[in-house]
Image 1 (tube, rainbow, N blue to C red):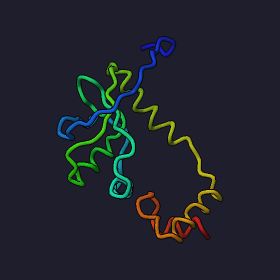
Image 2: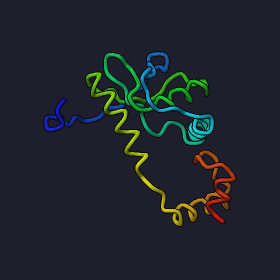
Image 3: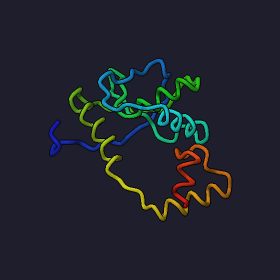
Length: 140
């Protein structure tokens, strides 16, 4: 699919059984324990707030492999997905793009510290992905 010819389609979510989905065996992202625990904590607190992106036909996960694994570990049986009618090569490229673009962002440390202070003061830090030590470091 040439980027000049990409058609824009409305995105539709649907619920699928986790057992119907396939992890991407060539997913280049690794998820250390801290990452997996942060994802699980977020899912426990907020539920699923963004759909997994999957390839129509194969139902292979393009974006959300770690979220799928966390949902499985939490005993979930269903999740919300967006199915894209996309070729294998484009699916691989999209998976990389979605992960890479998130990596390229930076934190505004003073804004983050202020938000974490409010959350910590109100006892609402659980599930946001920062350990107690990381919150303390950001605040001092």
